Length: 129
Image 1: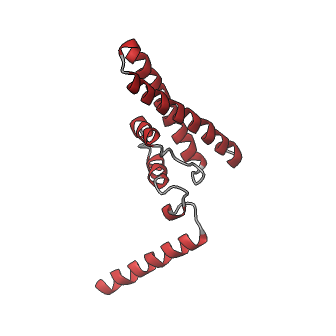
Image 2: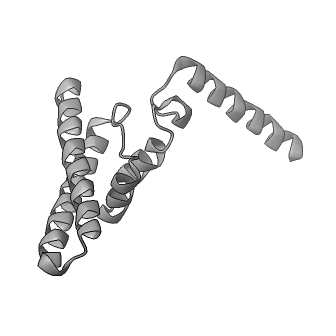
Image 3: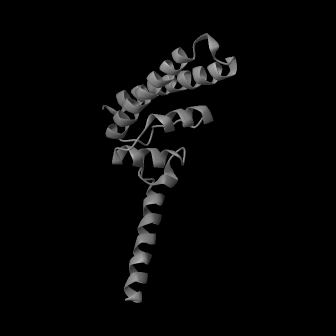
């Protein structure tokens, strides 16, 4: 049984190398940002959420999108729109009592996500989605 497992593992390793060498977009190693792979995977699984979008926006690590399929782009855009609305609601709820630094952080995240939405919409158009 061990010999069969070793043979299968060797085949998997060989296929991973071929995928990487050919530059397949599905290989995480071939993406412009390695963190995009997890986002695309969550999009495929239907488990994207606004909180992670906001987290990535604050960290300056929004998804590149160039390696995403049309379906993944659509799902990412939908969640990004929810995240923008959440940030707008958050700013509104803060009102005049909010700490200016907190307001600035929220506003910057909102601006980054809105820019991301424009970029992803452009990618959709370029890919003919």
